[in-house]
Image (cartoon, rainbow, N blue to C red):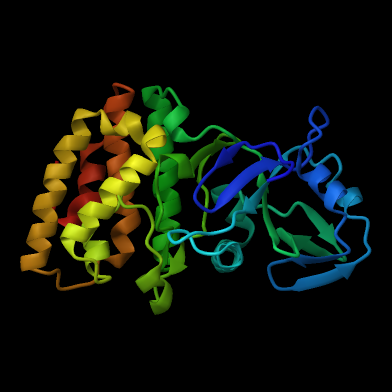
Length: 314
């Protein structure tokens, strides 16, 4: 990609500064270089097509924002357009039930206002960008104190409760998708999220393998041996990001508990759907792993409540 200060990169997106007066390769300079004549601006309830507008005047000095550029897809991550629409659709769904709490619980924030419409995303030709407030410190890079760790657990538990109460699943909860931002721990990256009533998305959008319960994929028609094969592949692909986790004693212990749990589910399936609890499962693992990483205590009762639907007790 030409231009753009690369802050972080995932399967579907690269984040960059929107405006950085010390660096001429930010989003501002991408727009300056490309000089798009036709651009689409995305609000929560309206998409605006604009032509021959000085976009730079709306971007200049927005140094407290980042732009997430949606990447071209592959066999695992899908096309850039589809990923963009998935994430934008999820953001709009979240907005419907969060409203003025959206900036409290997420980093999603309009970068500018155009004709009295708050703009959250922008596209031109085959380039797609989503705007967020600028924050860097994901929880895998934080040296937690016990007090701060407890705060993180409380903040994310509150977020998950809000999502669950509105039948919404983030679906990709992992350490680099939780960020410390303006004295609040927030969940980021909503491209794999969906409303639980969306049968199509529930069947085809996977989320990560190594922090999700295997029954989630088994229910989508993925045999256990193939899940294990895919899990091993993604562990290798993501090794640099998750090696801290793979080295933990707790990781091996939980792997054994998860094996027993999935075997139990296969032979004795749950009577009620457990789809709404998959974020809870991922978060429970994160709590356990981060506690060992930082040599801290964690609330066992809270974690056991998160794991209860999966017949796991610690």
